Length: 185
Image: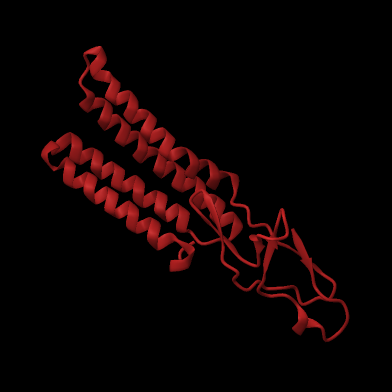
């Protein structure tokens, strides 16, 4: 959607710089459907209502596009699916007489690789949009942590529960830090 600055000289003070757009299906309950600022948060969009720099020219149009890029959407929507699907396959391996350990190690290694590749893709999108690098930083960090968890599982099997706990705590902390209300994103 877009806004148009006021026409006429001396009207700059009347330009909308911080706002939210609300919509309703029944004109009784209203919800925010747009804002002067928005930040993608994994697969969600958080309206931040941060100030926007309106053009100084009078009668100019400012296009506001809060949609996360397609790479961001695909990466954050598919990573959990890839990980849990590969883990499900690993859990089924004993049914075929195969040790599940190798399958689980492969699931963690695949998740590490997918996070790192996703980090590169999201970083290129963030650079092109001029947006903060929060999404790519998260993906790189999780890729490294999944890789370390894979190593712990393969090399130091007795340390695997601790590695899993640390992975979960790090993932939860990173998601909390990246939330727009905490200054991330």
